[in-house]
Length: 336
Image (tube, rainbow, N blue to C red; front, side, top):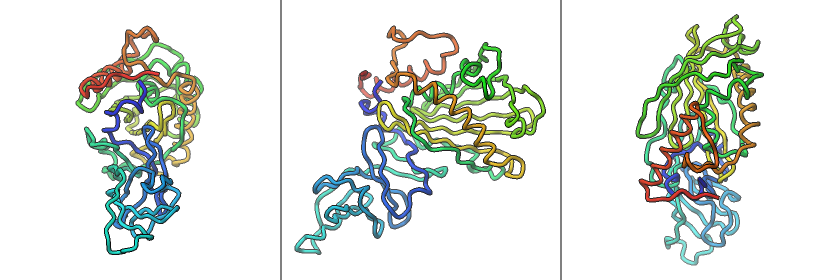
């Protein structure tokens, strides 16, 4: 599936920028192959339009902002958050309202990130109860580009069979038999539950406040169509570690990976730097493998391009749900 060619994927919210990085200057981003420009309007709320002035096609992200508007750096045409051109400096009659307009998109700020939907969203931005719980702290972990398809990243996040091999240096149990999962379906995705046996390297022992070399994780994983996941890990000592990961598709083969964490402990218990260090080791191991895979994932399990085993069920469910999504929208899967 080529994500930029499937129009229905434009009907979802995607995290695109850390909110703190969106200041007084406009910022450019490419979402599903569409160049967009983001800035803050007069109220401080994020705004997003196509990154293209309708005069001579210059990128608005190369311009500047004043009064909550984005201004083209080529000839000074000004646009508001609705995409309306509200001022042309060279116009003979300054009182005359221009009739030109560019495409505008929905933008919102949530969980420390700016989210964008290119078309009318099918569902709201995922709800994260821990974000409203004062017993949890938020830890931003990383924001970086991977040369991997967004669906590959999501499938990997629900794959219990790769721990022994990909994560042998971090937490992988030497026993390659994957843990069983239970499933609950929702209109916007699904939720899985499993008990996973893992090993504890020294850094993780320190982070968890555990002395044992092995422990269990009570894992609840939630998939939000199409490319966002929540992993809620409960440890035997009551610690809860919640990982949120968005694989925001820049294009068909490149994803902006956004990851942040909520934990029910304090900085005095476990420094954020230590939490990030361990999770970064794990994600670096994933990245090394995922960047070697084909980004164009076939949704048809019987395509003959890939073969499957029982532990692939979460990924196959994702493929089936996405195929159903395309069919409901009257779209055929487009492949390279």
